[in-house]
Amino acid sequence: MRDALSPVLEAPRPAPSVKTMQAFVMYGIGRVGLMQKPVPEDPGANGAVIKTTHALICTSDTHTVGGAIGDRKDLTLGHEGVGIIYKLGREVHGFQEGDRVAVNAITPCYKCESCLRGFPSQCSQMLGGWKFANIKDGVFAEYFHVNDAQANLALIPPTVSPEAAVYACDMMSTGFIGAENANIPIGGTVAVFGQGPVGLMATAGARLLGAGLLIAVETIPRRKELARHYGADVVVDFKQQDPVATIRHLTDGSGVDSSIEALGAEHTFEAAIRATRPGGTISNIGYHGHGDYVGIPRIDWGVGMSDKVIRTALCPGGKERMRRLLRLLETGRVDPTPLTTHRFRFDQIEAAFQMMAKKQDGIIKPLILF
Ligand SMILES: [Zn+2]
Ligand SMILES: [Zn+2]
Image 1 (spheres, rainbow, N blue to C red):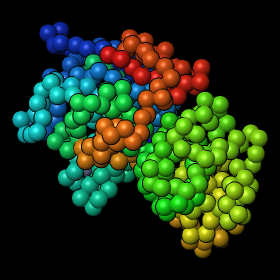
Image 2 (image 1 turned 180 degrees about the horizontal axis):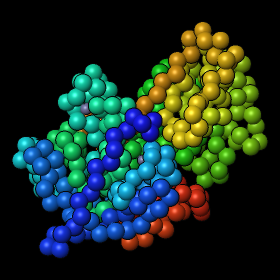
Image 3 (image 1 turned 90 degrees about the vertical axis):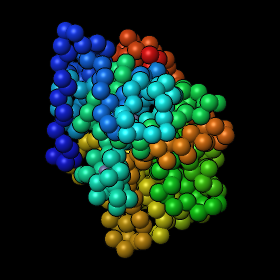
Image 4 (image 1 turned 90 degrees about the horizontal axis):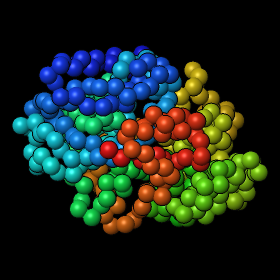
């Protein structure tokens, strides 16, 4: 994966006369902190600059700092942020400076061959739709730049709070694609492995799509509680029960129609394959950040002939996706805000980041207020 990603674009150094801002950066593998950077004043013809108001720290930010996608130098972290338009490129229509907008974590160009083939998350190259805090500065700064803004900005409806809208940037989009890709029949049986913030949104998505029996696998008490809140009928605590045996028992021995892997660990991926019935679908949204291979249990895979489908996805981005997610917030179908367990001011972000990296104090999502 490391080789497939582009080298980072170096951030320009601030000249003395340039207006500067605070940014929370990765200095290099394992090293983070606040630094001064120039405010991106020029949006470019097709871009926009957003004044950040709210952001969320993601576990994948901690993977990045750990070196999961290779080294980066002074790269601004963060890919879940909302704010108001500060500068708008002259070719960007339908928006005005001052509008409240949400921008997905994934910002495809919508012009390249991959985008035109219908795979915008794989824009230009594998995982290439992922630009923030990967190949360009991310959203943990007082201002951030958005590429291809016409396709990537979404207005936040007046009745939707920014605290809710910021969940559309990644948690809802990724969790819901996990459910959408799982091919859930109305009334079908679904297992969701892992009830972190993405897994919880996958549970909420499976419920919205009409799961008839929804089984969540989790051991942390607060997450188990939220799994029920978002629609799980049964929560299997893997420290007390064998999840695969329990899921088979709950489905008359056959396994579920659909499994969603929302953790990114080999044992849960294997369990998802075992717990899915022949002809069913295993939908992976977990970030497999370690090792060179992910194993498939050969016998439970029907020695390669079980009609079990394995699907993968990176968070779908773009304005139209965001509009639909924001509509769910507007109509109250989903409320992601119970995922916010902690709040920090931007100048406290390093403490929030360390807390997220170590998963301290029952943290699920820390909200950063600018
Ligand atoms: Zn994220
Ligand atoms: Zn593209």
